[in-house]
Image 1 (cartoon, rainbow, N blue to C red):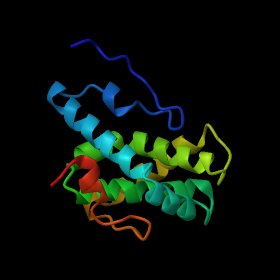
Image 2: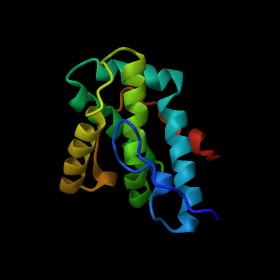
Image 3: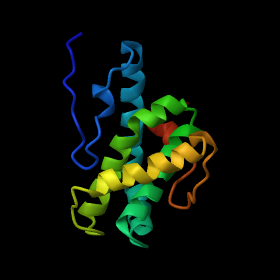
Image 4: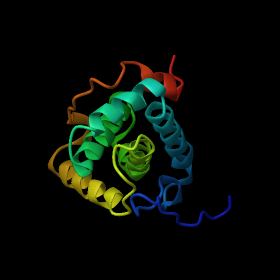
Length: 150
């Protein structure tokens, strides 16, 4: 298997999940979680809800809430907490892309790092699987569908 070069997501400045030093057995799992998160975030109905969510306050807070709602959906679908943590920068990047594309806020190279700081501080205060969010914009089995569950 070829060595992966460290990459950073442009919005967060964090290493992308696939470029971390992880067990090769986890690579497939991480890729599946990233794909599921992408399918969820970029689903037209979900992205519409995320845009509504992000238009209700300062970008740092609203992006954090929107990203946390996606991460919570992943955790509730049975994704192990360590995988949820690994894909956090990627999910933040996806959510920022939605907000910028919808012109909710302008592109800001510092936004991803600010959101990551908020999320990691919050994560340190509570277990990710126990976190509850307003999931009004999320639809019930979408993450299972994205992950290919029956």
